Structure formats: C-alpha cells, structure tokens
Image: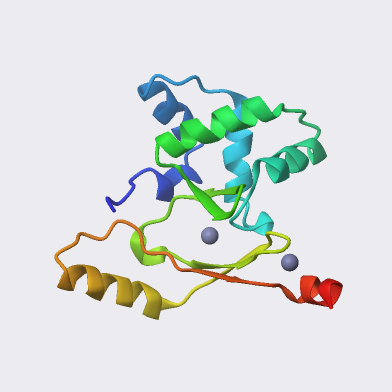
Length: 157
Ligand SMILES: [Zn+2]
Ligand SMILES: [Zn+2]
C-alpha cells in the first residue's frame, strides 16, 4: 500500500480535508469535516457505522441524514482517507485508512456485530512473508476472527 501522505497531518492541519476534497473536485462541507473528526477522536474507537456516526453527531446537536453521511463516507473512501470494512454480513464499518505496518485485526461477534480490535504483529509478518515468497506486493493485511461475544453468550445460554 502506498503510504498515504495525507493522514499523519490531518490532525494538525484543519484545512487539509478541504484541500484534498477541492483538489479532487468534491465539495468541502463542515459536516464532512465533523464526520472525519469523529474518526480522529480516539475516545470513540476506530470503527464507526453510519448509524453510530449519526448518533454521535446528534449528540453534538448536528442532525445529518443518512444519505449525507453515506455520500460523505463514500467520498472519503474514494480519497483513501477512510477504509470500508464489511466485517459481518450487511454491516459496514468505516475506519481511518492506516499504512500496512500499523494495521490491526478484528474480532467480530456474529450475533450482535460488535467489533473489537487487536494488534498482533505476527499476523502482519506472516502476511508479508507469504506475499513476498509468492511474488505478491502486499496491499492489505488484516485478519478477521469470528465468534460470539461474552454478552451474547450469556443471552444465548
Ligand atoms: Zn455479541
Ligand atoms: Zn479496525
């Protein structure tokens, strides 16, 4: 994966999203900035669904329709700012696009769709050595583990 020069400086440069959007012919809106800000606020975690984004923004007093949120998310995915993850069937999550070496992995509850992430360098190393050995250039190396989370287990038993 090409290192993305935009991401490290997004936090420090408030005008950056505007520059990137305008350069690619997309409209900058304060709502788009607010959506991106949610991803950068670490307290909220890395993964956000459109529903969570809408709820978080509503908490901030910002009412945004789903179609506006989806449009903003698709634009930012196209600009490589965000990555779209379909971890459980029909559930899409978005997270900041990170370079390969910083990739983390996901533990997904198939019952409620909860996602937890974990860092395990071994996975990335395996992905790298396998792709090198087979002549592939590595683009993305994430590992997804499916299971049933503790609260669903207690509900189901
Ligand atoms: Zn669950
Ligand atoms: Zn993640």
